[in-house]
Amino acid sequence: MDLFKVVFHIDEMHKWALTLGNAKNFIKDIGTAEYYIEIVANAEAVKIFDGTNNEGSHELLQEMEWLMQQGIKIMVCRNAMQANAVQETDLPKYVTVVSAGITRLVTLQGQGYCYIKP
Image (tube, rainbow, N blue to C red; front, side, top):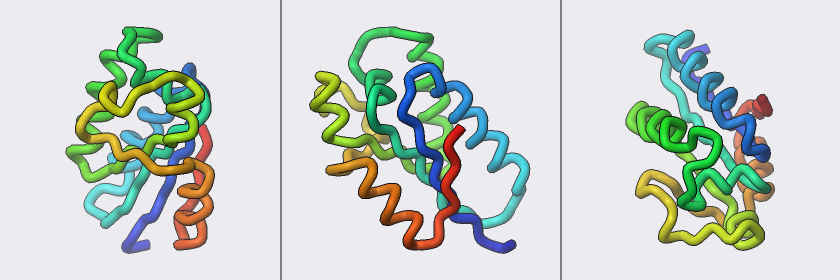
């Protein structure tokens, strides 16, 4: 396969390390192959951006920034942010807000992305 299109879905806080590790392992394994990868966060997973240092969030945010530098996009659900009192001003620059995470997942799958839920 010359081009990989993958979306990682995360909706649980305790799965951030696993999700980011899966993404890192994936890009390491495929070597120089071209890829389009997004991580879509919704539900309680958006709490990683709430400004508190919960569950080792500082280190995880550093990993996210590294992944972004590798071309991986990180999308966050606006509905989940509102439900979990996460403000857009709390988000790192490399995060993109989408109106609904579930819609983003459906859209990407319709475009041929492989869906991964660690």
